[in-house]
Length: 276
Ligand code: ATR
Image 1 (cartoon, rainbow, N blue to C red):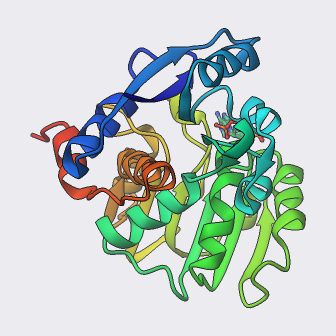
Image 2 (image 1 turned 30 degrees about the horizontal axis):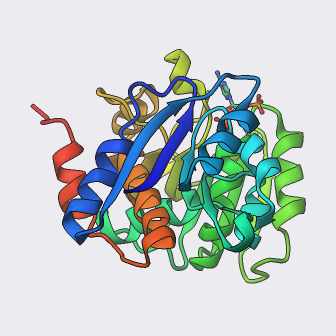
């Protein structure tokens, strides 16, 4: 069987093997997808041995997306701009191609699953680390009117503006600290900070949401994240976690590997824990 895998540390609770197994069943693809725990300081050895023993493609998750960028022999432009690789593919001459499907996954979840049209919208991206950087290009390409990047360390947000400035000249791309958000409103607020991991929340000002705003946390967990709870309290109309993005980035990787696009809706429904 054709071999695929996800690399991470930790990896035991990854949903990727389940997602790709369902994709494969649905599209009649014969493949095997496993979860590989790579040592934190030696992604390269793990990945090398996987591809040397016949592996055809891999997903890469925390904390190896930068290692995967370095590991890849060639990169897609979007992976280079994201500064991270979440998808690897073995190509001709055993060259390893690195791509990044995270941003496209977010945009597909927003538009296809959540029915949120990005065109001409005012978007606030909270955070300026690796996760934030990975979603900027697809948001710009979706034709948002404004993209503001706010971060605890505003210099890092400013760096991202420099990197992506000029990619979509029609979009107003700006950065700032928390205080710079006062008296602004956004149609979409994306939490790309890792603060949820610590049960924490960026200190965002009140009144950021309009009547039709969507709040989106790139994280997902069994319960609503602190950011999602805050957003509901603040009157966000719709609140979502990153489970849909996870499924959509997986579908994009699956398409790259197999040239078949799986249907994601049913997979997402099966993964979503029953809400009561
Ligand atoms: P990731 O790959 O998850 O993006 P990262 O690159 O370490 O991880 O970035 C973490 C992001 O979360 C950063 O934007 C960080 O803010 P700083 O750049 O100021 O460090 C943000 N972050 C982490 N914990 C936070 C908290 N408790 N409050 C606000 N922002 C937080």
